[in-house]
Each structure stands twice: as C-alpha cells, then as structure tokens.
Amino acid sequence: MKKSLALAGLCLAACVSISPAQARSEHHYRRLSHPAAAPAVDAAATNFGPTAPGVSSIVIDAASGQVIASNGADIPRYPASLTKLMTLDLAFQALRAGSMTLDTQIPVSYHAAAVEPVKLGLQPGSTISVHDAILAMTTMSANDAATALGEYLGGGSEPRCAALMTQRAHALGMAQTQFYNASGLPNPGQVTTARDLAILARDIVVNFPEDQPFFEVQQFNFRGHQVYSNNQMLKSYAGATGMKTGYTDLARHNLVTSASRDGRVLIGVELHEPSWGDTYQQMTALLDNGFGGHVPVTAAQIASRQPAVASPVQHLAAATRPHVPASRPAAAQLASRARQPADGSWVAQLGLFSRVSKARIEAIAARQISGAGFTRIARVERHGKTLWNAQVAGLSLAAAHEACDAMVARGNSCRIIEPRTDHLAMETTNTGDGT
View 1 (cartoon, one colour):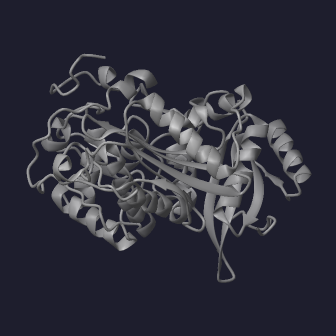
View 2: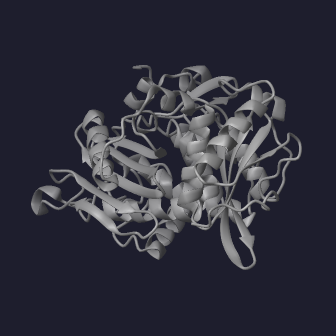
C-alpha cells in the first residue's frame, strides 16, 4: 500500500480495509523531529544507544517474574508502537477505577487526526469509543486512536499523558524508560529496554486479565469496515495470547508476546530485529526454549481462533465494570462472529481458579475443543480471596456440552449456563481445581 494515509479527509475504507500483510507493511515512519524530545543517545560513540548493533531480547515467567533467558535486555532501544502497551495500561487502570467505560466517547483533536500512519483515518471533531480505540491499537496499531486516547487520559493533553506514562513506568520499576507520546511515533528521547517492556507486559497480564481478550482479537468491524491484526504470532504460535508489534526505521522490528501452556504463562520481548521473519522466528525459539519444546500449530487450532473478534471484550467488560448501554445490540454482535451458531448464547462455566494462568489455560483448551465461542476471565472476590472465573461463551448448546464433557474428562468441574441467565461476575458457585 503506497497511498499516503496521512492526507486529511482520506476515505475511512482506504484506512481500515487493509489486509494483515498490508497492515504490517505500514509499521513504517520516517519523521524523527518532534517537540519536547530529550537528546538522543549517541549509539555510534557508546555502542550502547537505541540504534546500537544487535538484538535485545528477554523471556520471563509471568507468575513469578523470573528471567528465563535474556540478551542485551538492558540496552536502551526505541519502543516504536510497543509504547501503546503503556497507554493501554493507563486505560485499563481508568476502566477499573470507573473513571471511564468502554462506551465512553473520546474526542478526536486536529493533532490526533493529523498523526502519521498507520491510522484509522479519524476526522477532527469526531469521536471514537474507548472500546474501538483500544481495539484499533491492539490490532492495526492505529496512531490516531492511540493519540486521541492518550489525550483523553491526559485531560486533553498528550504531553501530560506521556508524563503519566513515564510516572507509571518508574513506579513499576521500568527505570530506563521515558515516554514523550502515546503512540510510539519517533521521538529521540522516547526509549525503553527489553527488560522494562517485560515488566510492563507482566503488569498487564497479571493485573488486568479481564482485558486480555483485547490482545487476542484478530479482526473487528469499525463503522462497516474490517480492521485486521498485524500480529502473526496469534496464528503461528500454539498458546499465543497477544500482545503487540512495533516498527520504525530506527527502532526496527519489535515484538512483545504472551503465551500460555500447561498452566504456565511466558512473556517474550524482541527488539531491534532486522525483519519480521527474523522477529517471529526468534520469538518462537525463545518461547519454545522457555516452555521446554516446540508444539506445532494445527489447522484446527488456527480455525478455532478465527472467532476472536471484538465482541468478547464487550461482553466481558459488561460483567466487570460500570454498566453503560451497549452501542451494538447483542444480536448484531453474535451475527458478526465467524462460525458462530444461531443459538450461540450458551456458556460453559469452567469454575473458579486461584491462578489466572490456570483459568486462562482451561478456557483456551475448552474453546479449542468446542471450535467456537470466546474465552472470558474475570476477577472474583470470595471470602477475602481473589479468584479467577473462567468461561467459554457464545456457544451452541451442543458445543457447550462438548466443551463441558471434555473439561470433566480433564478433571475439572463444568456446568452449562442458559442464554439470558449468564452473568460472569455472578455465576461463581462452581469451583475449579483450586490450583
């Protein structure tokens, strides 16, 4: 795609109706001059700056934070669109605090509309819901959506949001990270490290599991146009659950990936790779080594991930956050899901788990067995303890029975919830294996 997406008034269809391959090619920015930037590190003089030769990588265990493997993990690097993970971290905090909801309409400023591609093509003076802005960031990495959301989080100011992002980073222990914008567009002073990004990704995975479905979405409908994810790990790696890609000329190819297998969740970070092929290959090797072996992705697993569209997040959030009338009726949501049965309103309730990683593993396994529906994980407070509720929703009755039978065979309890009686936060009488 060689048309400029930065021209004002460009047709939305030209901005969002792009294939995953086209989306990947658009992770490409050239302008490096931005206001309020700190001096760039001289990599040529120190061999330790953001453009220093080589690759930076790290793999950690999400539950413990233990480093499994690392290479150049403390070399400063440009984060590119991985910056959006911190913007999303702030957004998830705001959602949990109730200061905004997924249906909150955020204004699009002239500044947000004018940022460089990749972008949705939002028009100044228009609005976009928080729900759609987040999905645009996790799928196609839309810079206009990220900037608009950043301005909203910053009380109308992207620099103020960047200051909050930096403050949050340092509070998490990301000592070498500094932010100057919400999108990841080039700024010489906006730097991080592979280790710092692993800390950030772990914060999202461990502390905001209810928002994990955002990162598993492979496509969603935005105002009549399909928006596709540019993260190929979702299709190519068994157990992958997201998270984010990023590219600029100087940052090169960057990737953060979370993956779950056999009750374990790993987080991998690859920075400054020479190509997307190298990036995905090296990330696969890093995670395989962490898990102790390679597991090929089957055609059935790939097919089971196709229903991962926007609506699961909407359903999940409705059960865990302040209620706002949905902007899309439930019937339309169900109709939008690929391979979704007409009676796909049944839920397989998998139980309560003491570990979010175990809840997610069981939900993913059940979804793969049923070949339909979507996973939901929610925090549940019970007798002073934090537990995690796992479900597969959007199933036909037959698929719900199939999923439950398989879960019982795995040693789990499982029950089926009828349509119109489903509420993730309330259906907590069933207990899991407690692990």
